[in-house]
Every structure is written in C-alpha cells, then in structure tokens.
Image (tube, rainbow, N blue to C red; front, side, top):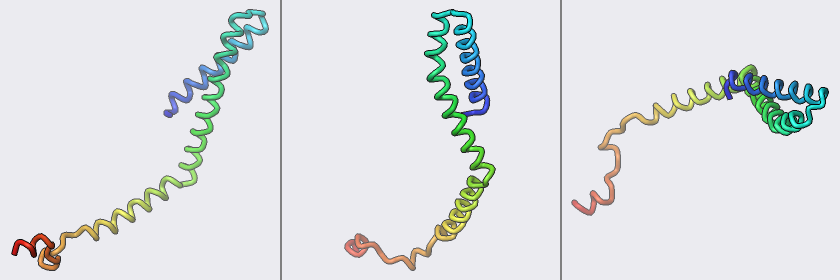
Length: 101
C-alpha cells in the first residue's frame, strides 16, 4: 500500500473515531451507532496496514531487500556464463538424426 493511501486511511479512521466520540458525548444515538459500526473495520484495516508498512520499513532498514538483490545478481551472473553458445560439433547427434542417416 502506498504511503499516501495509508495516511488517508489513518486520517479517515481518526475522523470516524472523533465523530463517534463526539456523538456519544452529545447523545446523538443514530450518529454514534453508524460511526461506531464503521469504526471497527476501519480500525482493524488501519492497524493491519500500519503493521505491514512497519514490517516493510524494518526490512528495508535492515537491508534484507538489498541482500536478496545482491544474491539475485550473483546468480544471474553465473547463469550467464553457462548460457554461452556451444559448438554444434561437440554435441552428440540426436537419435532422430541417426535414424534418418
């Protein structure tokens, strides 16, 4: 999730919480019911997304993504040497070639 979307989600959840808190304090029953019912899933999604974003940030700071990038580059370098073109004379003839001759 992008940072802008995460900030929007957290602001929306905070606004819903403030609306719910205000409506309970001023005895607006219908508004408090609607805001309270919307607050539960908003808070759950906000907490989950903040935890995921924190985990991604920790992985980035600890260098796990750069280590995996280095490993990927090293394996690509060794496989490129293996893919060099072979001399066709050194390859054994296929079984179908033997049958046709």
